[in-house]
Image (tube, rainbow, N blue to C red; front, side, top):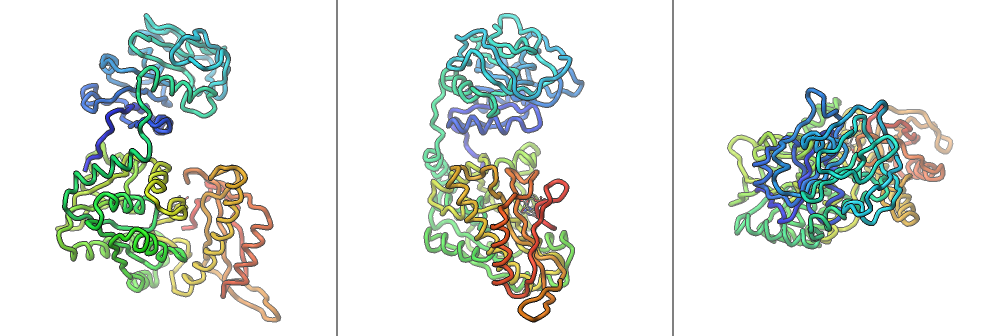
Length: 530
Ligand code: XMP
């Protein structure tokens, strides 16, 4: 099922390094829908999607490099307003007859912008001298004929230029970056004053629109969904259920390696609160057998992933008349896998970062209502649909679950220890994060923990409890600050918080006599231990 695009939207042409993602998010923050396209999309193809405006993103290349990302110059003849940032300004200049020069030294970081034309539609409402964020080597040396230069910096003669009759605007700096003092104002000026768009892309409207779309697509047919307890699948479940009620069946495959209390939360939210038809597959025993004697992390991942779909499809095939499979594919999954572009999407299933084919003889049409949403938008949607905070703000949790936080073989004894120790880590750090949130009003403020959990290594060490010598397991506490898991730093937790976690774990969890704290950033380490 192809997601229908709202009537008004901004097409962002991405010139590399995912600069486009940030721009699309900023536009959406202003309640205008925005979608990312490869920079070399032909004008005809873009016209078929009927965008309302175009933004040309920045990019890391030089416009004169041999393999520099290019665009179809006919896009400038579509009659649409166009705003170019950085590389986007340079390519606009080159395509329309201006020139780009190599500056001696690049300009990276904050710069002081002097506005030369206060009447510029883009610069209206900003200060005569203001801070902007630069990140470039080359720069436009000559604006194309007819263009007016509206701002400059010490090193950059054409820091902003425009051809208002055609509604073409461009800046050498990055308005989408928070450090550009009036960046948000400039985007607002473009979207609302220049393009005349309406800020109607709000969560309530989106829910209504998505519900209508799902109803139209599905009609009276039946839909199945694999519910994992994670944010994405939970939001899809709530959304599809809002649209088609009991035509949706959710299948929750319990592999026994979720964290303490999670299977109960899935039951409570979906069965009791939402009244969604839910099949809880108790596969704990089968997984335990499958993992017995396996200590290689990749083997564990493979076995768990393969078994998951076996369990799921064996239930799906027993149900009558299911035609659709709903799943929580989100926009970064699509952008990063390039699945859309290669046309591979329709025949694959999202499986813990991997796309796997349907098994022989099985086919469902896919419903992926979140396939154009960023993660924070998925959370907002979850809140609008009435999902509880603890589910919407659930931290990332690997598909293979606690199996990859138990070093070596997974045994019932180790699982029991890890679940208890992990519950204590989460309880204490949830409370610590909540205190920071109350102080700062920000969910992911400078010192809050982004992901935190316990790890159980495959060793024992000596300790003493009472008068007795013990020989028991240590627990490793891992808590990181991050925003996207690509890089992370160990969280600088107050000593008393670490101390309380440590004493609670050794006091409350049988079989543990030592607690250690992992103080390694990523890189060189990873967030998980396996
Ligand atoms: P690493 O350990 O590579 O993890 O720094 C980065 C992020 O990815 C999560 N992660 C996984 N998620 N299946 C998943 O669904 C996996 O096999 C897996 N391994 C790591 C990890 O929790 C972190 O947020």
